[in-house]
Length: 318
Image 1 (cartoon, rainbow, N blue to C red):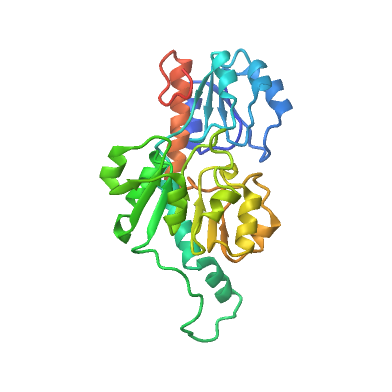
Image 2: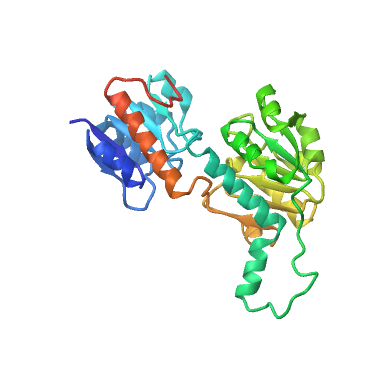
């Protein structure tokens, strides 16, 4: 019987699908596998379900010639050396589309939470500090009729744009390539990055992490933003230069930020933790029961297809 390793806990629906076909082992220790663990164990399996917490480099890939597929439990796959996988003819898959709406909802949740100071106000009530109504209490920023800038017009960016319709916003977007369908469908205007940053009241990042997008938002880019701007990131942490963002927030050169991802997660800089104008989430962009189940099913079906000699559903490499 073929063997499959799941490197971290995933919902049972996918695990049970795999168990119908294969001998399945799942790392349920609550600890991430180290590089040494992966090099030592991966070659004992035909298929691997990987996680974004598994940095799979060329050494790991070359150490497991028996592995036919690595199914990444995420839409992003920056944790895997894709060039090394292609060189080794290793199939890599991911979980696109099934998490797009959920992640877009998380981005909107952050946008609301920062602009209306929800977390601050919640803490104020819980601490027993609320004594009476006051017209000046926790004044935030309106969302309707403002300008929304979307960086990245992929699946998640599109779902994020779709959910803006009810707020009568001016929609700007920047993408590596202009997308006429996106413009028509969402009444969006394509602009250069500098124009998007300088004109938007809210900026939401929906790009993959690669060499081109690493520190896409840095000191220079932040300097273009309005003092009233709010920056949202549900993509990958290193898309933002965290030090530059911290400095801008401390100096109140932008209004606030909502972050689901961080440069060195799970480590979060103490400076961010102490700020009231930042809302912080522990990388839960796709974290709904329904979506995580769909992701689990998709990785299972990718594994099954490849190990049974069929084409993977969502290949990153072929």
